[in-house]
Image 1 (cartoon, one colour):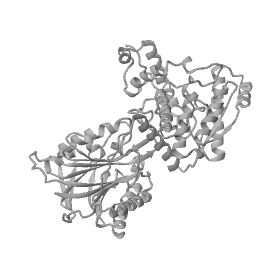
Image 2 (tube, rainbow, N blue to C red):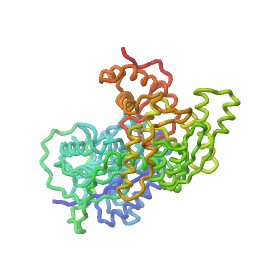
Image 3 (tube, rainbow, N blue to C red):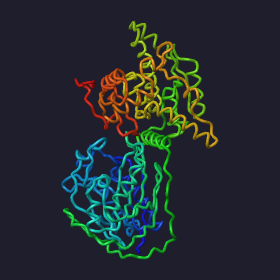
Image 4 (spheres, rainbow, N blue to C red):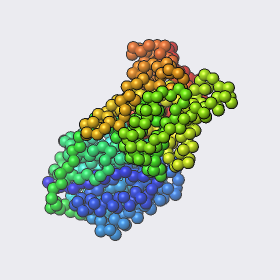
Length: 571
């Protein structure tokens, strides 16, 4: 039985930073070689970062990606790391743009594999950028036949894994840029176990971590034996290199029909050698509870958006309500409370508890805090224009937004918008008011989940003997925009439990009004909410980006026309 020491590099890349990403590969290779690794695998498009989107359409970018790969191969050899086999993702251009994986050894790119199945749904637009490959590639290294695949290839029945089962390999390496969404980690393991059986081989699945605009990557890298046993599973959201001494048993005889595809076999000409280094224990990370997983995704998405875009601090309006409290706590966890600037912006209708709750929150998370009363500014607008009713209410929100943007300009902070998915869905936000900002951390979080996250975060702090960050009053009091006397969200919206249940069907699942009503919901309520959702598309287009955590987030996942005569209703 041959033993191959695998190293899975669950790393955080930066889109467009080809030199920095290549340097990270080189640094990681040093650590893997020191640990005695035979094969080091990196995620999808590591050299360019994922997803590079329309950068791929630029010939100069594609050429730079190829040049960075060739230089990396030479740099690995020059650093004395040539004997370590490295699998790394990059953008290739063989006359056509390709999503590619390279097998690098002894200073050269020994093999190149082009992704065969290009996802074109949800947040994915790969058919816009790449041409699919049609060749199955396997490299023999140290007596082990290693097939290369990329991300979506593993989600397709009858794809490269079926070819692997037909031609016979020992290990399939699957490199990934698989975005996070709730419970996706529960889908990956059974999928890989099925593919391992199909291939008759072990599968090494390596995924990236980190945030890229609206996407968050959770890692969850793993190795599954051909019998489905989990040999290694990395934690979510943790950047590190994970090792496994993979015992490769004698391969079973192949009895499948020859595949109707091109098969390319390459060898490193390195014979199998008994592993003499001390055994390395494999990681088996526990799965995270749902709220912990979502909180981790939001923190990573926020942290990377702030840091990768060159900001050091954030500013937000602290109203004392649940949404701003959760956003502030997320920001403190992401970049440290000392880099969070909370601004209380009381108007004539702000309650005393809103101000005291906001101040207490800032104290607990170690944030900067100040009050900027907006009543004089609002009065100037209202009196000059003679505004009443909704127009007067919206002026308050817009003065707050203008104030936050002014402080951002003056002090260099990134403004965080604090709206949640439920509000965005029905247009319950003021354009150029509470919708201003550079990033919206809870944009894809329904209101009911906002409360769950707040309670979880406080309980998690208490379990560690820490002071819960979010004041209990912010969680327990009825939500209100406080734009008129005694205002509550329920004055114009259904109870949030009902609202979120309808929105989950209408927005996330694309169910029609009739289908939702047939499930037991009130017809008038559903029809009214559908009209609100449809009429707010123009607002959502102008809302800041925020991390995707659901199956269907507003943005790339859900692309509806602003100008449209179609209205859902009972027919």
